[in-house]
Length: 367
Ligand code: CA
Image (cartoon, rainbow, N blue to C red; front, side):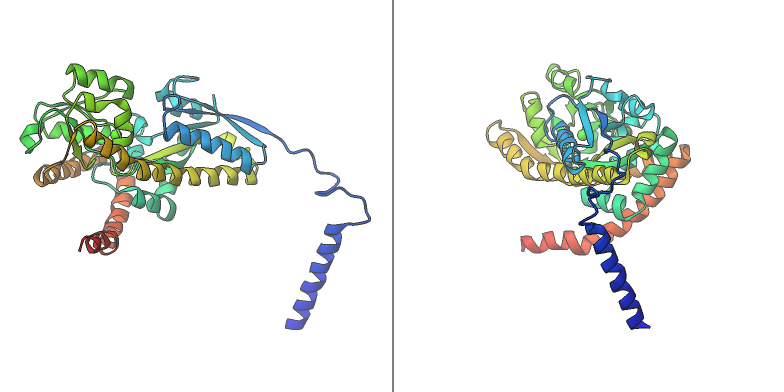
């Protein structure tokens, strides 16, 4: 039996090789009937300013990679926020098919889809490593796609900032009482937690932050991390720079693709998009990991910024308030509850493993 199968396999193989060579038949490679490959010309709109380092830079790089991987069959023209559609209309523009692709962050759409925040970052939630594991090896991506499906969107993780900084303050935060009455630019769930702690969260686009802080319209702000915060010049408007970014421990950036456009793409081009998005996801995180410390050193040494940790009891209280906020949101929205339950279970395992892997290793290195 075995011999019969191997012989059969050999004959089939020889047959395939012979017909594949087709030496004397004169048929062009790829078959005589092959139609010329179709070229797709797509657009991607982003929520970022033009030339915004790492984010917009990463999207440009992604478009170039897709062009290369698809042999020029999928061309993606990149538009920054406001160039084709306003930054915060990216979700709708892709959903309605005005353009095929968008790049932004899920928590920008929290007003429409509160559960989308889990696919960017939630306070005291998972770091980049945990988010990548949940999305790619847990239920994260399936839950994300289920949430976006009624909106005609197929999401992919495409970028991560790593753990952000806690923000810029003009007074020291020695206790939770110091947060009371403070006006701080802090978005999303972090803002809700801050409000519970007695502060006033303010929503404000990146371009307005510096002036607002400088003029005292706000008392404090968070933005991203040393690399981007240095570029915004925030050290000229505040002297204390707190860590860690308890509210944004590893925010994921998203690529969204219009569902019909995606379904109309041949499998090899879909794979090119998937592979390029996955590479960009890692590339952006690598940039932050490589550039943040250099920027932080310049902030300390050249700009005399005081870099301080939030006191333990402040973090413990913010953590307690976060759990209250998450429970309140889950009680209001079934989709939020569903995602939260899965997220929480995954995070619990990931934390437990992390204690005896990452955390134990970090301790070992300090011995
Ligand atoms: Ca931030």
